[in-house]
Image (tube, rainbow, N blue to C red; front, side, top):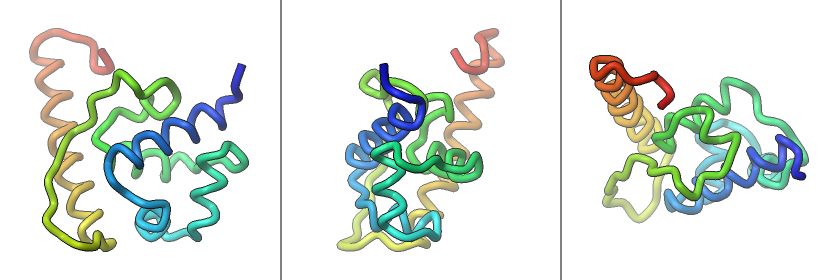
Length: 117
């Protein structure tokens, strides 16, 4: 059985790759060195709660999605026309995803569903 760090790292890598981001993009977004992102993805280092939240919003998923199998997760999809994604672009993506996640949460509440379900 894999450790929680390995599970989170694997989820992070899968979401990052499916979103088309590089380790360098994520490193700039979190304001850390790229080698640290590699260590997160292999389970050698742990992410802070703030980093987990920022990444969940960036990927358009609930924070709990980072702790498990992400193969059935449907993150928010976006289109961006840019040859290179910079930190400001990632901040904008994150802001839009936060709005969409909040709308989804409110819709589930109004429908009487559990907030995480």
